[in-house]
Every structure is written in C-alpha cells, then in structure tokens.
Length: 311
Image (tube, helix red, strand yellow):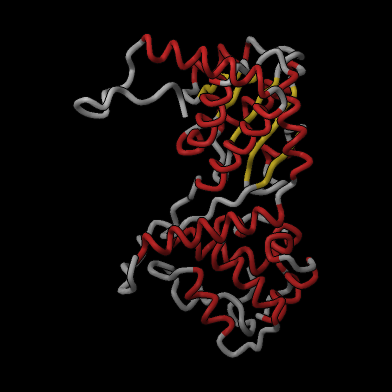
C-alpha cells in the first residue's frame, strides 16, 4: 500500500473505517483533479463496475476487460500517485472489502435498483460477447461430449449455472450430473472419476475449498478438467486444462450469476447441436417420463397440463 502522503494515493486513510465508501466514490475522490484520457476512462469504468474482479486481477486482466493495453492500467495507477497497479489494487481491495456488505441506495429514477441490475447484467453480457474465448468453449463442449461421463461441481450460488448445465445436458441424453452438496456426496462422486471422464467446475471469487479440492482430485484421476471462473489467473484456473472466463459483477456488491448461466445454456446448445437427432430423441424420452411421474401442476381448468421436462 502506498504511503498516505503520496499524492493521489489511498483515500482510505481519510476514512479509516471505510464504511459507507463505495469504490466509485473512492475513485471519484482520487480522479477529481486528475485529467483522464479516453483509455484511462475505460480503466476507471472497469474498476468502478467490476471491483470484485479487479480486487485480485492482474494488470493484464483489467486491461483485457477495459480493452486497452496493460501499460495503460499501470499508467492509470501512476497518474493517481501509485507506484504501479499492485499498489492501487491493494487500496481498491481494502475499500471494496470494507464496503461490500453495504446495501445499495434506492434510486429515485424509474426502475430504481432493478433497472440498474438489468443494465449491469446487459453490460456484462455485451463485454463477454467481445472477449469470450469461443474456441476454448468448443473444446469444453467436445470434452463433455467425448467423456464417459461428466461431473459438474460448484457450491453456493455458483451452483446456479452448474445445475442448469447438468440438468439440461442430462435431459438431452448426455451423461452429465451435478454435485453441489460437498462433503461425503462430493467425495464419492470424485472417487468414481477416471481418465475417461470430465469435470466441469464453476467457481468465482471467493473460491470454495470443496471446488478447488475437486479439481485437484479430478486431475489426479486423469480426468479432463474445465473451469468457468472470473479470471484466468485464479487458483482454480491454474489447476484446470481448459478455462472459460466470465464476469460476475452485480450491483449493491451482490455477485451476479446471469452471465455464467447464459454460458451454461450456450454450452448445452452447442452440445445438442453436435447430434441433433440423438438429443431430440433423448428429450422426447425424458418428456415421457416426466409426464408419467405427473410432476407438473395443471395450468388451469380445461387447459390441460404443460411441461414436458427440464428447461
């Protein structure tokens, strides 16, 4: 962390507790009298809208999100009085961590925080479309398709996209299952892995111990390991054969699984496209079983029943 007397540095020293100070407010204070060029503005926007990611990302990571050169990130930090990106990042992380549980403030504008949440997810989806590694995604799809079976692992809210991938893929005939309970359930599933299998982990900062342990166990078994995470430099990414990076920033310091879930459905779409006839046949069989189990409530009097399987 830079010396508080360094021009432009910190600001956390002006608010030792950091409570109530958002990253945006903190950056406003740092950049108030600093002229920013167009590229520096892009860097500032990424720091403001993606503080979770930027709290541990490298300068190259931030540059990729901002669509600038890594040197621009370093120069941005230096323009604020820091020696380099790691020093600015240390203060960014401190401000973010002290204020991350402060709820968002209601907005007087139409839509309020709901509209802001929608806009943030739309922004993240747009950024992903420009930066997503589609070739690696196709490799992940091939790994799932060619595996004897695929185990999808996640914990907490990270299991939202994981369950979507496993549930819909299984309904299309692929031997894919999800384990998000951890403990003995996860241990038994991992013990059954072999070199013919694939493991897909969904994990974002902060990372659950079980998910990282699952990746290591899968590698020891010789299985292909894939991870969907928020930076290619995260520890789980370093332990995986194939890495997909997606943004998870929400609003009010709440992690959003919207983009990750979109990726899950995209992966399933690619899987089914690899053998449309077999996928359609499997979906029809699953539909029949779901109807036999009478799992769906009727829509209403005289309207019959809807639903033919997992969606």
